[in-house]
Amino acid sequence: MKKTQSKAFANLICSLFLLAFEVWTYIETTGFRIHKRAHVQPATFPQIMITGMFIFTVILFVQSLLKVTRGMNEFDPDNEMSASINPFTHKGVAAAFFVIILCILYTYLFDRLGYVLVSACISIIIMWLIGKRNFVMMILVSFLVPLIMWFIFYKLLTVNIPMGMLQPLRDFVDKL
Image 1 (cartoon, one colour):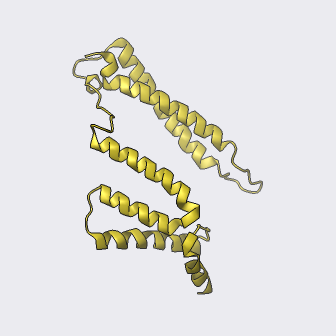
Image 2 (tube, rainbow, N blue to C red; image 1 turned 90 degrees about the vertical axis):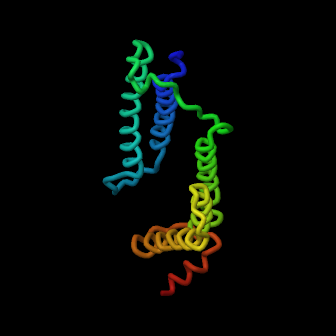
Image 3 (cartoon, rainbow, N blue to C red; image 1 turned 60 degrees about the vertical axis):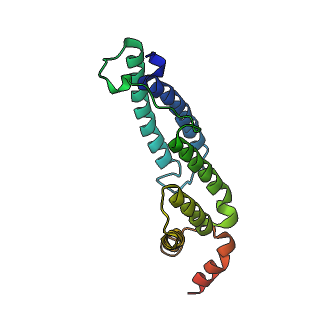
């Protein structure tokens, strides 16, 4: 088997993409607005998480680079042939790409339709993807969980979350 078909080589390539993504996201967080009186800035937590990811990705990169360049023991799990990520031959990869598209769609529709409706629709689709077929339970969970989460964030934590078409519900809750 060629080195370029091993899991170590796949890890090497993946770590390069991750490093580029992490550098880009860190640079993006530097543009967050700074609040003068706040001790913890909006960019603090994302920067801490990205730095942690960066450290572990560098470790993966170095390990993979050493394995690919120096060679591996025949019993090393990274010496096995890497799995295909072809969405046409692997159903799990196709489902993962579909969920990524759903996440992009979620962010696009979030302000337009509101948190509760978009979360409910996406939840139903993902439940269907993972094999749930009890429609009553799917609908109840998909609508009640985002609704309860919205109520907790809106009333208890005073975080304003877009409601979209359900704005009358927010107005009703405000009157309570």
